[in-house]
Amino acid sequence: MLNKIKIGILGGSGYGGSELLRLLLFHPNAEISYVTANEHAGKKVAAVHKNLLGFTDLSFSATPENLAELPQVDVAFFAMPHGAAMSLVGTLAETTKVIDLSGDFRLDDPEVFESAYGRKQTAVGLQKEFTYGVPELFRDEIAEAQFIANPGCFATATILALAPLVSNKLAVGKVIVDAKTGSSGSGAKAAANTHHPQRSNSFYAYKPFTHQHLPEIEQCLSRVGSITSSLVFMTHSMPVSRGIFASCYAETEREVPTQELNEIFSEYYSGRRFVRVVEGSPDINWVKMTNFCDIAVHSSGKMIAVFSALDNLVKGAAGQAIQNMNIMFGLDEATGLLFPGTNP
Image 1 (cartoon, rainbow, N blue to C red):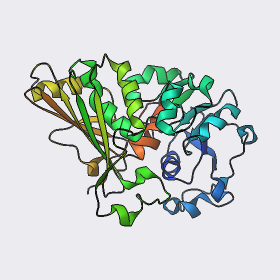
Image 2 (cartoon, one colour):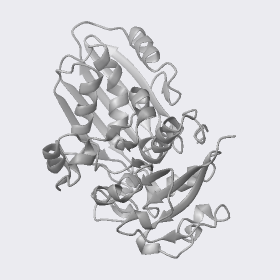
Image 3 (cartoon, one colour):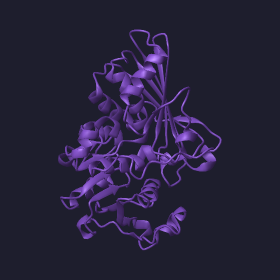
Image 4 (cartoon, rainbow, N blue to C red):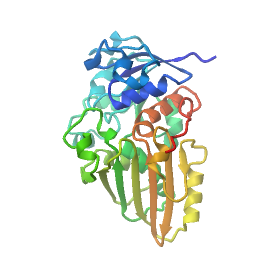
């Protein structure tokens, strides 16, 4: 019988940390050794995340400046704000695997990182050790990796929608991505444009041409195939708590019937348990609370439309992180993650 994987969670008070706890507490091969949250240090986890009442007796601890002061674990999940992991990862034991849910290690170029995130990359040497963790594209690399940069939520939805087109050299003209997200993508702390009264009955664009996920999308797709298309990436706030819906439009050199596209996408994701190619349109209701990304593809003349939907906190964050962990430790990637969404 496989020994339990000992797990540390750095930053357990936010939505990402909450989802890691919710999922890992029921993972058959996982044992959570500690979870940190400075503002809640000493409090019971279930007193902060009341949905976990009766499921855990864990308490939050403070995050020390040197993580060697914490119990040694097999894998540490970082669910902290951007910038925190850079200063802490290097203080872990050399044998500890790392999965970072922030943007600290997603971008290869320090200058691109500084432009996207508005801060310097202070761990450039360590950056080279990180593998970009899209399991559907880089499973073999993930299996051998010690450090994983977990992709962003918008990036995951967009990359999975466009990778089959790029790989098959079907996106030759301009690509336009119109992506929408629910309010939980902005984190647990309310801000002027993210709290409920502002978003509940509203819809608006934000960060036009400047969203930090754009360079990681371009970087990842350049590894999938030769992409010469210019990518226009626009993000919007929609009045739901969970979910991302991306509408991607691409020009092609020849007319590709919808049936052929469905065959291309189905073959591309064959054996990829968490990508479902669906008819018509995906619906965020059917992927909420799950690790699935649903994709539909259509064509008209030389235009292709690809729609993708996922839960930004699961497949877009904690679920994908656990999927990466499973692969890193030689488990079936679906372990602890295979459950349907709710209806409705």
